[in-house]
Figure 1: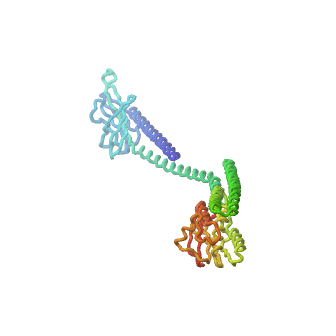
Figure 2 (figure 1 turned 90 degrees about the vertical axis):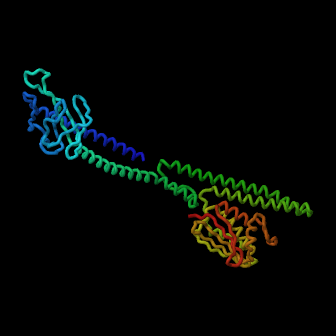
Length: 440
């Protein structure tokens, strides 16, 4: 923008200077012709004036040539002589102005020409013996067609405009190239940060120009510091869980050792407290993991490991866990959180399945990771599905569990910007549909 304003201002100054110079040159030419006209004048003893036209500009002899002269009596009146170029017309000066003994102005010329007029008063003695007051006074006038000047100015302005357009385009192109080349390292830095945010990398790699290398170093330090802070927070969470669960375990043991209404009440409240502690500690750990840039977890190894563990746990029941997951699929988050949420879903499915649990993972068109966990168990009525997502809600007390599994899965999925939905499985049982952020 400022470049365009600067070019426009420069063009205006150049155009104004050229216009002024052209008019000055034109006026100088008229003065030369006027001086030549006066020099060629020969008065006779009666005060009449004749011009030696052989000493004048040849354009005065060509009809409507654009250069004219006439001689007018000082007391006004019709011109006593005109140039051949005027043919049968005369010059009528409009709004004249005087400066340094000269008369300047403009007039309409023949053939609709716009004339610049220059005049000078001249006096001739009537005779050699005449007194100074006995003289004949005239105004010698020279006029020139300004269309020549206007044409040259128009040509100059046209050339100037095109020159400035080319110059401006070149400058704009050079600026764009310079900005593009200059910002390339910043774009690389932006892309590297995007890879870290998406979990494809853990730190900034590569070399950067000296101007932004300190920025890259500071960003790497910030990322490492963030990971250290989250690591310390997780350690504190684990310690807190240990410190809270130990006295709760003691209280539960004491309540079981003392069968009584009070002992039963203490045991129930201890169970509630334990579930609350488990729930909020898991949420706290997951929330901390969200602050770590560069987290990336391959999905397939996690599912395979969970399948082996659960098949071993439910080996007596003959439960088979089938896994269908591309090796390239990755979760943008912490491995422990993925194990927590998928492990809860798969464990819940194994508890209710008759023989088979099927786990399918894929990347959806919207870029999210979708993990489907299905079983061939009795399933769940549509009206009961919202209830099992509530914290501590259990529809069947005969199946072991705390009632926290699905609610924890839902809460952690929400923390990651995902969701958990329940539906009917193709195997006949319950289908849990988990969506989470994916890499890439």
